Image 1 (tube, rainbow, N blue to C red):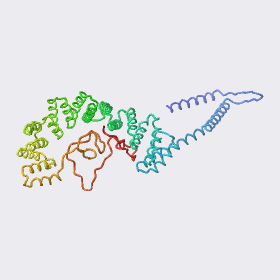
Image 2: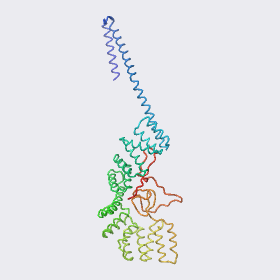
Image 3: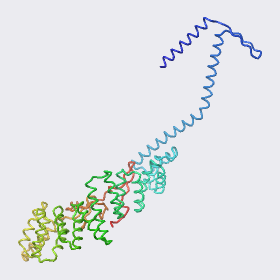
Image 4: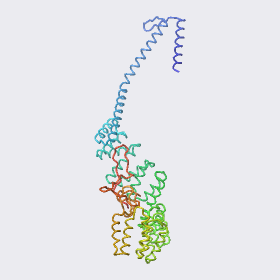
Length: 466
């Protein structure tokens, strides 16, 4: 296109030159006592030279007028490049854990770029890494006014609140963060964990339901955790005297958390208290098929209603028939046989329990065998051998899948690391001599957005399981 225009302009000039050559003439100009007599070609050339001179003068004047603006723009560009370099070096210092360098570059970035979201983020984390919590809090609070960076500010303030033991403040901030980013997994997990630790079970139930609708966690996990929340709500309803609601919640909890004996045991005891013995019996039988446990055996004994030992033997054999391959079934019947002084039956069922435990007899089985030997053959000395084996034998208990801490009774929260839905009924793994169980950071703890930034822990909240 440009070549075409140039060609057209050149053609026009050629035509004009040809016309001037074909029709030469003179021009006479008289003005204010001045008289100019020249040819047309010279006049046109003079006008062209004058136009070029004026054009050059205008260009020079425009360039002079633009010099201050260009200087300011160049200065801003240099400051921006220097500020971006300071930001980059500050993030590298954070990654390396160099608090002094991170703070130095953060200060330089703020001076060059001002209080932008990125400079505030860097300055906040640099201050936190250096232990200056007040400076970090000011930067995090300033970020709340930035629409795109408010979530980051809330995340930092939540971490500070947890470290300061301000659980309720952290809970309020987490609810605000969840409102800003409802589809963020971290926001859900943080809010949910804080609600659980604060004992706000109804609010946690709503949060979990919303997260399930948004597919923020696997359906099976959501169902299991909902069952545990309903179990806690059942306890609260019973405490408030709402027995019908407590029973309904316990039934739902058992249906959702079928692998846990505690919800089933609670459901059965509530039914038993209402004298609904047949319904309670069905609850225990169903639970025994999936999760045989001493607590369920205790409830089954309560359903036996103080019957003589021989009748209880038949009663427990009915329970064992619902899961005959389980060691717990054999142990439950063996205990009743010992109480009825049926030594042969006790020995037979304890033998079945030992056969069902491939890693060797548990401590409970060893103690029952010692009791059997002491009762049946008090002078043979066999009880001592079983007592010695019991000292070294492992036994199933509730073990936290996160920190490895052991608990005699099941609860929604681990008593050591406060992990939710982490207690599992199993034989604990052996601990090496001189070793200690470590407590890793909670999975719901906020993760660093800039590598190298310290991760706050929910354990600092110090909330109890209510």
